[in-house]
Length: 127
Image 1 (cartoon, rainbow, N blue to C red):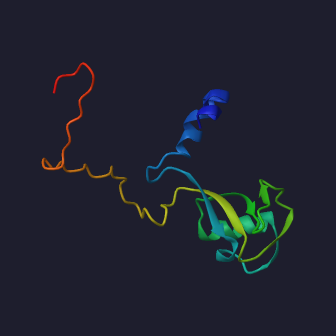
Image 2 (cartoon, helix red, strand yellow; image 1 turned 90 degrees about the vertical axis):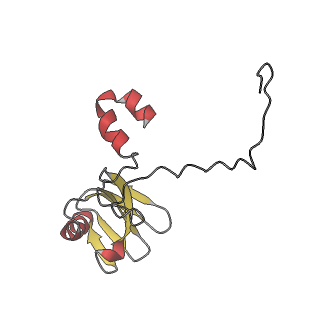
Image 3 (tube, rainbow, N blue to C red; image 1 turned 180 degrees about the vertical axis):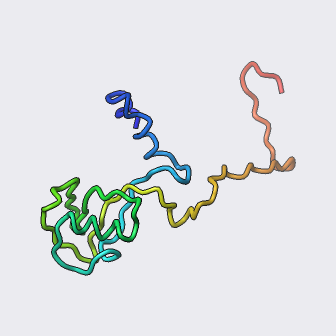
């Protein structure tokens, strides 16, 4: 985010949101293609339409094949074979499955135990 912010200062706000852990901010997401369409050949445009029917606010940015190939922002007319092992790449504001709209909490502070505390002497520092 820092390098993009330096290279494109006007875009810094939007790009930095992608790296924010706060609920409701946009994030990159991979969803299995099988959630939207059965195995088969589809144009990128029809695959995008299938995703939009289920998640109208998400933005489809590409496809990641099971073998690792990625197609980012292909032509809408490009035909792509997808199966259950392939992923659709999205930008979404939906909560992550493990967050479920919970507020991000800082880790609890450790309780000090006077019996376990150790004294550390630093040079020149009286204890």
